Length: 72
Image (cartoon, rainbow, N blue to C red):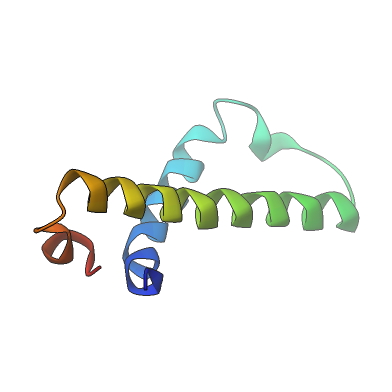
């Protein structure tokens, strides 16, 4: 039901993470494979659930026009 909207919204969260991560020190984390895998999982969850939340907010704000904005 919302997979098409997630497809369009998740790049915005990718850009947001790329902009915010240097400010909070995430670009300079040193560690091995487990830390890298953990950070990848955290970023995936932020993008996935953030996209779902944003989709639901847009659909609630513009119920008749949300299909024009996000395709759902």
